[in-house]
Length: 126
Image (tube, helix red, strand yellow):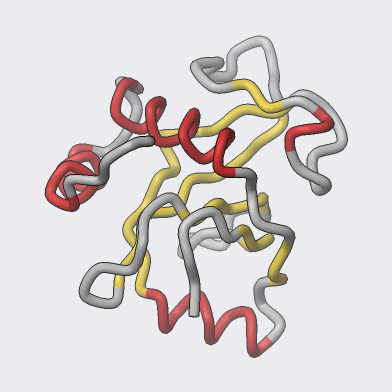
């Protein structure tokens, strides 16, 4: 079962190049929000920058790409992991998860449906 802060390495539904994905919400009616971590470039959204020591998978400065945030079915993610189309990675720390969630709310690139799903969950930060 997927939990908040779990990560996995996979592409998205459009077969885009794989990236580290972070599960940002607890499952709700079988769905979660995920965000994609991508390499930091000059034109990247830099609302949340992650450094090498923030997660074992991160090898250079990376960013949370909120434009790729998505609502995904837990069953689809678990199936992809089971079938080898995705690979489970170490969970992200609670501190970094909080930063990612704050950015999800603040980013102008977060898709509206994702933002509404997140606010409907009424997640309380510590």
